[in-house]
Image (cartoon, rainbow, N blue to C red):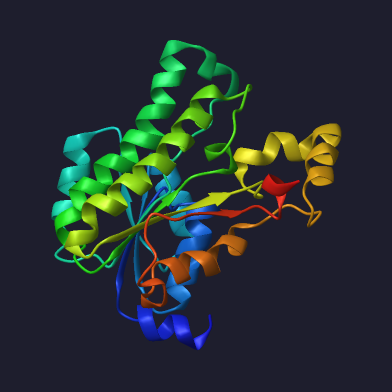
Length: 242
C-alpha cells in the first residue's frame, strides 16, 4: 500500500463488520497493508473460520449485528477505535417479497449499521465511520426490494449521523459499490445473458473487485478527507451515469 496510507493508519484500530469475505475483507486487507490493527466480524463461526484461513492478519469475532446485546458487549472490549466500517449485509432476492425476508434484510443491513455506530460512538472521537451502501441506494431493485430499501436507508443514516456526530469530531461517509465480484453477485456473473447486460451498461466494461473500493475507503477514513462528511461515493465503473 502507498506510503500515505501507512502514515495515517500504522498502529490504528479498525473494526469491520462483515469483514470475513468480499468487500469487507478487501477493504480490511488494504488497512492491514497500511499497518492498521484490523478487527473483523462474521455472522457465523463458519464465516469466521473461513476468513481466518484466508486472511490470518485479522482479529476475528463471531457477531450477529441483529443482536443489540452482542453488539454492545463487542464494542465494550475496545478502548478506542479509529475507524468503524459497517459492511455486514445480505441480499435475499426473491425471499425479500415476504415479510420475514424483508425484515431480516432491514435488520442486518440497516439496523445493524445503526447498532454498531451507536455502540462504538463513545470510542470514536476523532475517528471515522464508513458505511457500505450500494448503487441500489439510488434506484429500485424489483428482484430485491428489501436490499434496495435498506441501502437507500443506509445513505440516509449516513447523512443523518454525519450531522449528528460532527460535534463529537466523528465523520460519517459511505461507499456505494456497483457490480463487484463477490459471492453475493455469483448468480448474475454466472448467467451469460445477465452478465452481458450488466457489462453493456457499465462504461468501464468490467466487474469491479473489492480492491477497487479500498483506495476510496482509505481516503475517506483518513485525515486527507478531514472536511468530508455525509458523502455517499459511487464506485461502480460508471453504471449510475449510463
